[in-house]
Structure formats: structure tokens, C-alpha cells
Length: 384
Image 1 (tube, rainbow, N blue to C red):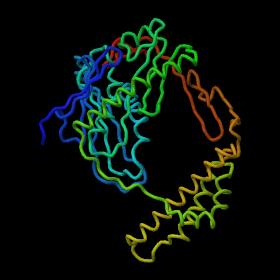
Image 2: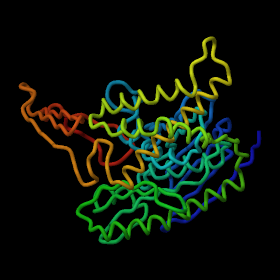
Image 3: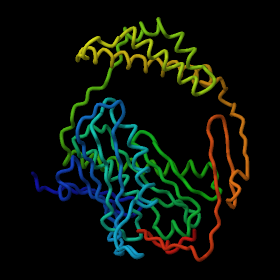
Image 4: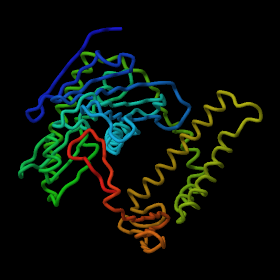
């Protein structure tokens, strides 16, 4: 195992952001420590066993520990608990721009873990974790195709600031905009703002993407210096001849099934067509399934899924018609019923189509306030 340590850095808005690999977590597929100021985050990417599933088995985890901020967990039990709200939301920020970029056919168990090692209360760790997760994938043997960069844009005293200090985020900004993307395009935007004009948001996105390109270039540099050879992945290919046969025999039935207005009935109708296609083109063997029969069934399933997707996409994009018959500018009837729970302080049932949300309000007293232990500043007490 090599003991070489590789470090690269770039300046973003007057602050240095660095990536270091080769020192920690050497058994991971890829591991990077990303640092800005005295905030450091260890990000690891690990590929495990191949799974027989038809989805990407990716898990993203952010592990907050109080030692990073020089704190000891409060209350009676002096031990860490489950992930807090900040850690959960940070994990989602990492997941959203990265998940769609994995190659089709990647079915290995994959874990991305970010652990804040040190927090200086100036540079928030969430943006560093987003960049570090991508950098860990880039230096690993996982066939991740392109780096993802992330920055935060704040508006402090009327001016846009890239990666503002934590104090400014808490007390002195009208905008908290998180942007993630590749060198080519923006992939994710999440924002909280106080009545910011649309034109200013667009300006902020342009500023963010310019900085994202620098971070992506830095990850390419790290990859060139310390990256591992990438694993080969076989991308599933649709058999065009088989697709044409299924379209000719069951295309009309599938088109009709995907237009049933009721959602559950539409699902049942589409499933019935799928079952008929599989029975005709890949009937279950009388004895034990062979490798050839399993491969044939997988090919038929892939072709059917491609046909279903193309029919629905064409109807939406070309005919401007949704699966339940609504146009692009039509919404379902909405109803709101209040007072559903007789013993709650407030309750309401929101219904739109087959989607429902039941909301309840319960009022507490000041005696029920709770101390919160977090890595950040200004979060001492929460009243429940």
C-alpha cells in the first residue's frame, strides 16, 4: 500500500480549499480530506459486492460528532445519538447531484461517507462535504464519469459572497443559495431567500458556476496525480429488433394502458401488458431457470421498459398530455378540510387527486424547551 500523500488546492473568493488523499482511510476505494480554514471533512467512497438489483444501491451518510467543534454532548447521556437534521440534509445535498451521474448498469453496493473532523465555525462543512464526496469518487476505482463541484452564494450588505462565513449566514444575509454542478451544467439548486428578484438569482447562478468549474478542474488534477484505474461497467443495451417486435404486438395495448385516468387502475393495466409481453417473448421454463432463460427475460424486460418510457415521454413532450389525461397547464382539484382531529390544537387534511397530507399543530409551554447539541453556532435552545 502506497504511503504517498497528494494535495492540491485552489483559491475560491480569497479562501483556499484543498483536497488531500493518501493519508487517511487507505482501505476505502477512494478517500479525500477536504479543508478550508480549520474546517476539515473526511470523505470516503467505497464499492462493495455486486447486487442482483435493478437500481443503483447507493448510500450517502454524514456522521456528525461533537468533538469536531470541541464540544461534549449535553443532557444526561454523554454519548452521540442518531444523525441530526443538519447531517441528514447535508447527506441529501451530496446525493442529489451525484446519483444521476453514475453509469447505467452500476450495481455494486456503494457508500459515500462524510465525517467532519474539525469545524471552525467560519467555514460550514456541508459545502466541503459535497466537494469531498465527488473528489473521493474521482480518485477511486468507481467509474464515476465527471467531477461535481458545489458552492454557496450569500448576499451580504447587498453584495454576492461566495462561501460566506457562518456568522454571515446566521445574521447577515438575504440569500442562502447552494449550487452544485459539473463543468458543463448546473445540476442542483437549493435556496432560502428574502424576496430576491429573479434576475439576481440568475446572476448568482452564473457566479456559482464559474467557481464550480474551478473546483471540478481541481478534482481532475487530483485524479491525474493520485487516481486509481477505473473498473469497467457493462451498460445494458436494448435489443432494437426485440423492441420493434414488442412495439408491433403490444404497443397499442401499452399506449392505451398508460392513459387510464385512475392511477392505481393505470398501474394494474400497465402491469397486465407487461405480464403478457413476458409470457409471449420470455415464457417461464418448465423446470429450473437456466442462465439463457434468465438473460432472455432480462432482455425482454429491458425492451418493455424502454417502450413504456418512450410512449409516456412522447405523449408528455409532443402531445403535451399527462398520463391521466390532463394538459400541461391543468391541475387536479384541491380540497382542504380543517378540524379533522377533535383533540388537537389544530389539524387539516389536504387532498389533491390521490395525494393527501394530514397536518397537526400542538402547542407547548416554555417549560418544554429543549437544549440542542449541534456543530454550529447560535443554536442553544429550541422551544417545542
